[in-house]
Length: 119
Image (cartoon, rainbow, N blue to C red; front, side):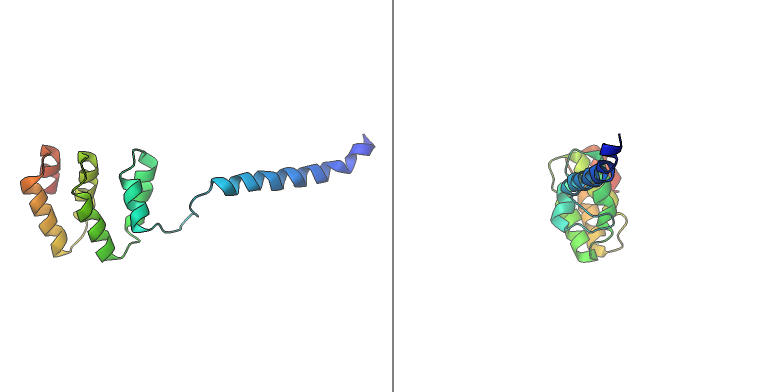
């Protein structure tokens, strides 16, 4: 057993380094880091709840003009669920252009739930 005693610390160090390397490869975004507007849009329109949640948190970090542009563009998405997200987020903005986009959506969206949410 004494022959292997010197190998244990070396083995643990190698295992630790190897384990850290695999973790680094799977991390795509540093905690607290910001996403670009395109990345946020991609996550908002993804089918994964966790990505949509992350994207909604990241929206607040965008400059107001970029946030407005992203959300008004999302009102043209073919999926009503994505348009509902846009409506919900647009309601948080005080920009007159956001209010105008909500009025147009309330009057003309193809989905009754989206129209109702935009009112």
